[in-house]
Picture 1: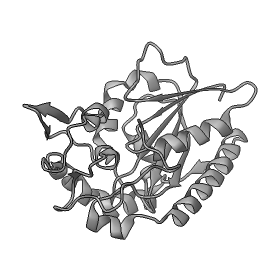
Picture 2: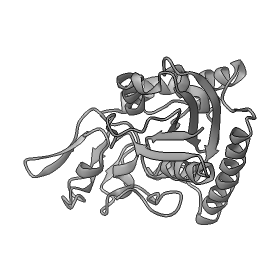
Picture 3: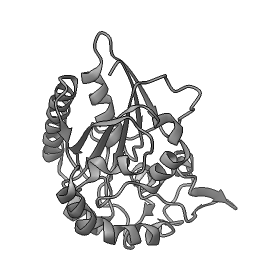
Length: 264
């Protein structure tokens, strides 16, 4: 792994945090790491890597559709490369850590796949009461994630196997445990983002930061279209708590990322 290209999609910072930690552990004499968000990706600027890391959040055992779209469009960057896949998840995803490899064609060898548990960023009022962690638990999860990444990188560098999410049992757990149901829910939810015009202060942060250009300013109002990728970035960044996805109530507590900050 002399040159590592780390590609990632991160809605509210969890996956970005995990990728940065991975590259900190992997960077050493003779190893060069380049980190690029798929939102900023330019194939002409990508390094001539021998290994590509693809990192992504898992939503009920599935990848965000925006990442699937990116992979399908940019298959050429994976051809002949070693592949590492990394999934950030709340608790469980079955085969989430290996999922991206099924969408990628022509890679040389899948040398590692891993799961990194981090706090849930879902902040809709009723759902957040079930999923969100308090600050103590969130801090503990971040520490455990650091240790997990450190140990996983050490194994990869030593040529040992890291195969989380691979195998038939993992596939069955991911597919029948959540994905077969979620794939339908995701399509249903793409046009369900709600913006409360009475609370909205028209700051435009959600328009600027939406990774799919799903939100726009129309006739002085902020409106959402039908391309939501369920990343929760706009919901958690909105200073007026005017955006939600599930139900009809504003966020209870906005998620602030694995280290207390969201993308700016």
